[in-house]
Image (cartoon, rainbow, N blue to C red; front, side, top):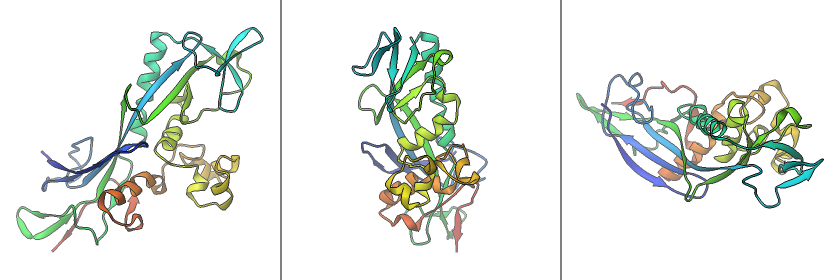
Length: 272
C-alpha cells in the first residue's frame, strides 16, 4: 500500500491546497489508485474548496433579491432579470446537494504536472537499486467540502419555475439554479471558483483580458467553445492553471518550469 507524507499546506481565501509526496516505491505505478485516487509513485496536489449552499425562496429571502412582478414573487439574477421561483423542499434540496458534489469528478484526477528536472524535492531511491533515483510527477486532485463556517465561497441557489420563466437564468459561480449540476454549467462555474477565467482570457486574447465577460470570450472557434471555460465540457492542459500556480507556490519554483498533461498514467522519471 502506498504511503504519503504531507509536504506543506497553503490556505487562503480562494481555496486551500495540500501537497503530498510518496514515501517510497509501490508497483505497479498507475494501476493501484490510492489517496484520493492518485497513482502511487507520484506526488499529489489537492485543491480543497469549502463551500456553503444558500437555498433561497419565498420562505428564505435575501434582502433586495426578490421583487413582485405580475403578482408573482420573482428573484433577481446578477443582471437584474426577474425569474419566478419555486420553494425548496427536502427532496429538491437533497437532490441538488448530491448532484453539486459531482463537481469533484469533473475536476479531480484530470491533470498530471510533470516535475521539472531542476526540482528534486520529491525524489527517492528505488529499494532494490539505491543508485536509481525516482522523480515523481504530481497528480492534480480536487476536493469539495460543505462548510457552514469559514467557507471559501457562498453560493445562492434558486429553484426556477422554468415552465413560467420568460428568459433563462444566467448563472455564475456564486448564483446557481436547481438544474445547473446536471448541465455543463457546474464544471464551468467551479472553474471560476478556483480562479479560471473564460477560455479566450486563458489564451491571452487582448480584448478579453480587458472585458472578460464579453460573449466572444467564451470562444469563437468550435474548439474554443468546446472547452469547459467556453461553453463546452472539454479539458485542455491549459485548464490546469490553478494547480500550476499553486505547485509553484508550494515548491518555490517558477510556474513556467511545470508542464501539465492529461495523461495520468505518465510514469515518474528514473535517473541512474
